[in-house]
Length: 575
Image (cartoon, rainbow, N blue to C red):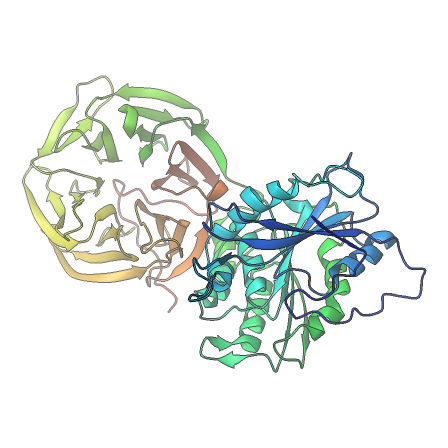
């Protein structure tokens, strides 16, 4: 390894300016900076990159140190700044990791260029870069030692970790914290690229809608920053700041007159570090979120794991008492969640019940995954077949007994169907042509049918005629899709008494108003993907969500509107 004492390493990628004076006290003890190369990534295969480790003089290997990760190598004369701030007690003992973007070396450097991964790694959304840092880079750092042989030990607590950078490196830092807030709680963003290069322009909207995450962020930019084909950096950074404040984040900023360079960021870097680390080790806290979120979520009520260890959970359905039933589809078992929140086995059926709903007669109706039938289950009685001849996925029953069932087409040829099954057993196809018809429910007044198309970002709305047939089909609810997928992955649907639609998606639970607009996004713990949902409990105010091998619950401030009960007319939407 290459050893560099103190702050002799000044310029690595540009954007390095002379550090501002930090006071007239005696020079602090200098940490050491070492250079390393990492070329074993499986997340960004084929890449190689240099990185530098700063270890402060105060570091004691008996105690894991806080961590600061910076994209584009060493910037802002960070080692010198850290020396002084740590010596003064204005930031904790922190090991700095300063990493370059990856490059895929050309096979023949004489005739071909390397592949430059900077924009791909930094501007791209999703958790790829966060995974690289957490699963590959930081573990590699911990294989190194200091000059005197001390092991490098890094804290695994997200409250002890900060990440920062400039331009694309800044949005990269924000994305890492956004995707993994439990791993990175503090972000420094200079001249951040929150514009339309690889989807970063979506952040201000998502910040306003998502349940806030426990992230503290410092933003810097200047009014002469870039204004090019991808967007206006100066305006985008201000939009980020306004969105963060709207959602209740801990955010500070420094606006200036500079351009797309590091001069101003270097000047304010010490203050930014003081802000990011203030109060440590007190944890960074999440804000309350938008008024729309506050209307839904109950303060201080977080997600709770109801049960786990199942093969694949689906089909949550609530009865008139508020008891919830759900299926472990892979095991062919159905479970009951009592009003006390305890899970108990209900029954087993090797036909693998999947989507299900209670009817006005009190029976549990389920689409069977093993055979093309819909069966009704009554406690203590054999299951009764109520419809057959088509494979069902999810279903809903109105108060008058009309049942609607989605029958998706796995081939992707857009031949999915929606079936109507009447109380007398007669059935007919009432719509077809969706990519993958999945979740289904009715509006609280039971006049509209909603159907999720999993392979798009739409939930369709239909008007229900007196005879049960459908009219006026519309791509009505427009959902958000993650950058890592081409669709929202919409699955189960539920409504509350005020007319909101809750959609189980790849990004968590997306909550829409009656006008078809996503107002809020409520992610599940650990980024779990939701498959279906219902509102249970004696007041129908507990949201139950199935997600892979788990079932989650969360107390809400709103009440569900089970479709087997009499219709409820909500107030008109605010347009």
